[in-house]
Image (tube, rainbow, N blue to C red; front, side, top):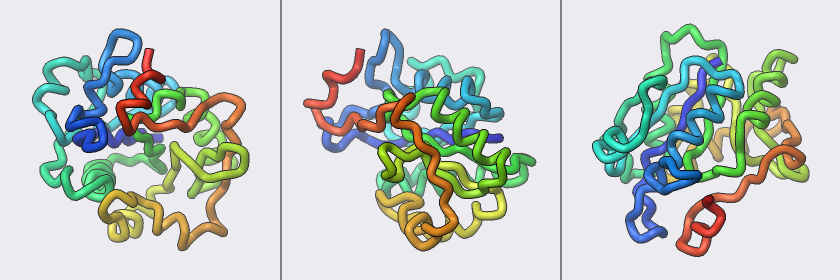
Length: 192
């Protein structure tokens, strides 16, 4: 089971502060998000950087992870998802759990539940919060090419998931995770 962390955004609504570098519990947010994938059962974990990639590499301890840079990060999350799935092609992974760097309320327990759903036969799954689809998401390897071909702008895999809604296994995680995003200066109060 591979993990894919999308951490390329420039934090436009945060005044240009890249989310990967936001402090959370004394370390950059990217470290916490990558650790959640690893501790939840993903190996390898691939991180896609973009905005301030050199600063992220210099400040964050990412030695345990595969790190790549998306030169097209400003085009939106879709380009980072495409870059990450392309980077995982040929890795031998049967599936990937995709997570976003700006959701510190989602930890290893939610990742582990998605992996358990995969082991139970789901090749397209998403964490759910009170029945509503959220992150992280899981994609079987046979779906990666189709997902990459539809990933555009800031929608990522949203259109693919909507088109295949009947095949998505929702994995309830509201008892173990909180799906909030760190998008605006007001959201920064959620970081410790």
